[in-house]
Length: 458
Image 1 (tube, rainbow, N blue to C red):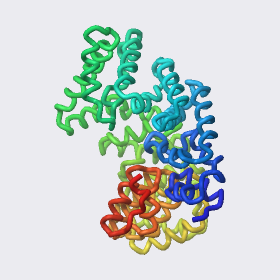
Image 2: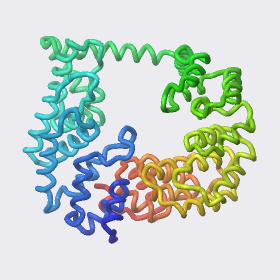
Image 3: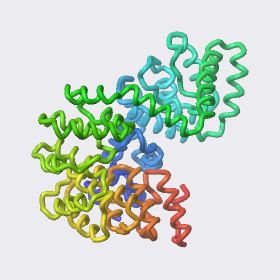
């Protein structure tokens, strides 16, 4: 395998297995700048949902002649990055530092302990490095953190610090840590305060779990309807409150059919585009009561945001005219990388012959990260909602283009569901940055008799 530096950089950013395989075959020296950049700043596209890439990156430089360069840079960043910096970047550095420390890097181990235990614990700022420190030092780290959290609770008694379960996740030391904390709490007021706080929240969770799921959902619905009333949301729209769809979508999710009809009537009477935009957001996840001609007019608006909102509202309904709108847009030659809403028109209105039309339109695009993620998400929804969509090529497009490991995992799952993952993709996924995708690839390889490389068990 030989990748250009541009190809390697793109694969590294996406977390694709070919990046690790390239380093394994050719060494890290030629691409060290790219790998180091990913070490110093969390490279995940969706940092909230994607798993850690620390172990994946560590494998690229752990045994290399460039280790000292990586170690010095990571140590410097860990020591100098301010606590107000992005918490995902700080957590990423701590995870790398813990792996380096467990491999024998004492300077990094010392820096990690100092950084995590010395961080200011002032809510609502996110804490960082707690799990990596426990992964390194085990129960002693849990005790040190519990004592600090107990001190914090003197001034912030209503907060909930990280639980013992969270701190020890996947380490197999929960029972031992809990037992030692209970013993220490008999004489240590800070640890007792921490455990008492944890028990209060645990009791609330146990009480909540006693209620049937439907009852809990009903409580959520009732809270939402009290918070977002019909008159309130209409007034908000008229006053152009909010720059994002969230609160309007939430109202729409729990609105009654009669309320949605009232919203639609207000939309039909409205002349201000900025107000129409917010009213359309209400139908982002609920079908319109009626496919009125005005909605089709708005779907052809010159204003990008208004057009997108109208198309998304149409996409919630099943109607032959909606599918034809999507097809005409793909055929027009005006389909661009930012038009994922056009693909959404097919989610409930897909026909088997649409595959080639969609693929032909995709081949003309050069999307950036955000555009590729939006297009890929729409393609995955089309496949999920339509068993007639059996195009491996559409899923391959998602696999190659999405910057998100979660979406890439779903794409491979869907490949398996329609008849099997191509062997070359299985081989690459064995080294993917996403742990779940690596497991899926290994299962697929075993099921099909595909030979596993020795590195697959690393």
